[in-house]
Image (cartoon, rainbow, N blue to C red):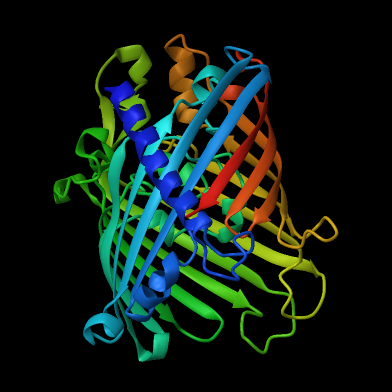
Length: 436
């Protein structure tokens, strides 16, 4: 079955690639395909015509090529994985005169193998690994009101698209930073790309600088099972619901702002599902000692704080070149959450190398501390207790064209798996990305 999926993925990529080459070889007179926004161009004007009618397409193909020359459970391994994303957005105001309404659907195809399985670490070294198959991702309607101050969205949603997220995270390859702080989806049924579930989201701009986001999502973590290909539309309310609230302060984000931009966020979450205690049995004693079923808790919660600030800017107030720093802290109770304490952060510099203004250089770290309750249970049951794991990543994204980039990266994993029984690992590789 895996070989069939792999062949299907190769065939799909070949089809897209042949279409792309055809588009390049038949480019519009006078066009420069090295400076165009998309690899496949404007489709002889069809792309613009569709956009004028409210229909836009987006597609990207990303490949990670990674190896661990030093450290891990198995050294000198080479792995690759890939992700092909497809997105369709329809402005129903343009297409059908339903002003303010948008329809969105997205899908993904993934394949490959995870180098982290050879290393044995928890902070997966490739953020595009997971759900190796064709699957539906998001499917929702969006409505904008009050001149853009208020919007609501409902359908099949990924909570990670709107909560505990930042474009700065996308500059990294390791999954502990890229996407969302990894502690949150590990701790609770927090859906993130490429898994979505039934949900609703309300955004309200309280002032020009303050934004509120409120979300509610189905808390059933089975919707991500590969056997459903993203099409498990069940609504199992008895498995709990996830509630999320985030407030953001948008510093110097207005068109006439002169200062350096920043984003500051605080968020909280509550999941009403049932969770097993990591240490105690049903009577409150050590489950490792008694062997009795674990104590169950109704609901769990967590908090996160994010801050990013541009501290140096090259050029005028409209310039995006310069240095931005960021950090994220997440906290949760340790009796039912694997990572009650997690912090990551880093530096992102756009245009560091002279005459390469669109390149991005990034240095980041992530530290996760395992639950003390879990570590005590492991110790009392004869297992090596997990304590902490640290990841450091340095990368540089070479934007060779607006639609094609290479991103060499170096990662170092301290204490892989947290139990101090695996050698620290060095990871070398590159990410390749194409926007079709």
